[in-house]
Image: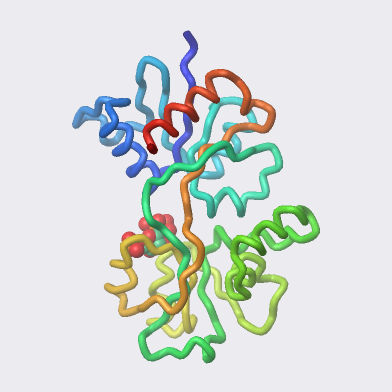
Length: 227
Ligand code: PRP
């Protein structure tokens, strides 16, 4: 039997998902597996990839299924990839955060992560997705965050990471970033001023392949675990 190949987003998602598979006896982890970029079971090959590589591998039919964050999915603008099901792995959300003494009304510059700032032409390219995002993130700051090039009243500075440093360095007044435990904000003297809809983990595949038996079976297994 050919094995189903799954690409899992490296980092937070991979860690939580592997934990979840282990606890549910789907994989058997040995200490020497900790740096492995793939894990094999009788039915599956789990690989750990960066989100963009997951999209490319799906489109080139190198992997069958992707496991990625909803933030990545909705930003990716990948017409050929479709959402199949959701996994409840952790409690992550986007938040607007700033130093304690900052008033939200005074925020003029927001630091955002580069991976959310590059999708400026959605409203023209994918009006349906644009509408969807507007409904999901029914908040002007969040919409500006996603479509920063369209708006001028708040300026955005783009960083690759370590956004929490931006207010400390005077590079921005606030940040919009992923928050899970809140420990990173706290350690860097920032507090949440506003939270947005949660970020979930999604099972995705190439459009048109979602009804293949082995893909449906994978979704079923994951839904079973979820219950
Ligand atoms: C995210 C985010 C924060 C941190 C928040 O970074 O950018 O820095 O997690 O998590 P916490 O609320 O549990 O402290 P991530 O570790 O995903 O890596 P990144 O820097 O590549 O975004």
